[in-house]
Length: 265
Image (tube, rainbow, N blue to C red):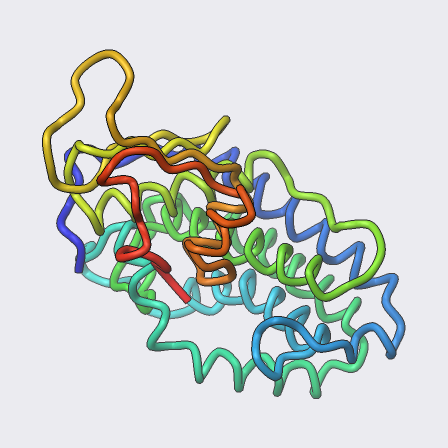
């Protein structure tokens, strides 16, 4: 588990909820236009098809409903930044469930609509402080909703990579929350102040051991755009490839982040 950072970033729960629903709505609208041929297309996620991936996006919302139905943990024993590092162990089970759901729900549009309905109906009943027994430990509902932006933004990008035609849009607030959580996860993985990582317009973090930058231009700077950062953090893009294609700029002897990436897969 990465060490705790000095101060946890705050997220507005109302904005987070709206962002989750907005990004899910973009996915649902796009999936509703897909015929059998495009639903059967491969994705960059191994043997997952577009249909499997769409079913998994419904899981991102249904996970909230499922956890709310379970007994509330007695106390919080985890933090939001633990989540990115905890989910890799669940990958095989998640993949199996996504395929099963894709088979059980041939009408994907109805399945996605049902997930959205369950999500909105249950959230009105519980406060953001309600604890959930997640795979990363007991987390408040408000924090767990931030993780849903990561799930939905990352898989929107996966769908866009798989499908020809116009991209599925990204909700600005969802993209911001996803970018910030993954940037903070880097700072937790590589604590320090020698390197400044910039992902405009959403995040700037200090990381990597070494002389701390105090003023003026930092000696070690990494800068990239939000989607490139998300792809790097989740293993969709290799550090060397991003540098070669000028998707990321890195200056300074401590600006090589390849040892810390990906943060989650």
